[in-house]
Image 1: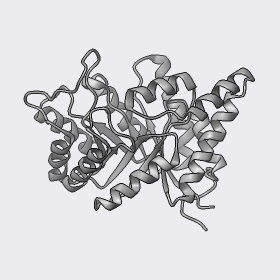
Image 2: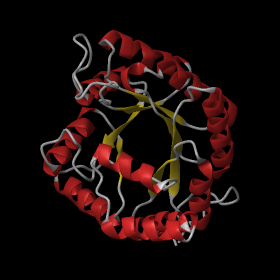
Image 3: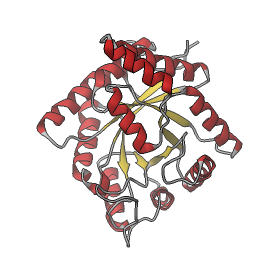
Length: 288
């Protein structure tokens, strides 16, 4: 079986306990030699400094290629570009450029009067600096703010044309969802790599709430399976089986890269990677 390249998403800690959890997560997953690790950015810039500190510390202490998230939310153009410049000065060469979610308590995204109006505007400005490899978000199921799935594909094309070199998808529960999206992107002339985002299910109820917020469909069969597994105290085994099975189907379908949303809880992600043949002793290269 082909062994995929992997990458991981972390989020910056806001408490002492969360800090310990982040560093445990990095220590557990860094030996798997990810192609990159991304660090999220809180709505409204709430974790702006924490994100910067986490990005630079992970890069220096663990030798990982770290991609910093950067959004358009609640900042002027100059402030956002100053943040990007600080990343470049710290040696960061990759950015995940996103529009960003509305701040807490606000229903819909509204651009700062002096800020970037959209992710496309942000990508164009970052691309002009020539300092970064730019990754962007993609949505196999329509983004809650999108008119429909076709509009998402069209907008992704605009982001790639603006200077992005790859896209990372929102998580999904069915491999066919990704394959349909990939086909639609190819038909639209998108040739940049599209990396599927994978959510190892740490807690099924929390995963369903997360899915509801971002428009991800929850298959009835999966809901039934987790309900039954909870009765028999087998949710950990089901989570491992479900995630590994999803990854297997993607790999068989030609996927060579997987991006894991770790939620700063590393052990299920590590176990899935081990099951896929990714261990500290195996070079993460495509093998027959």
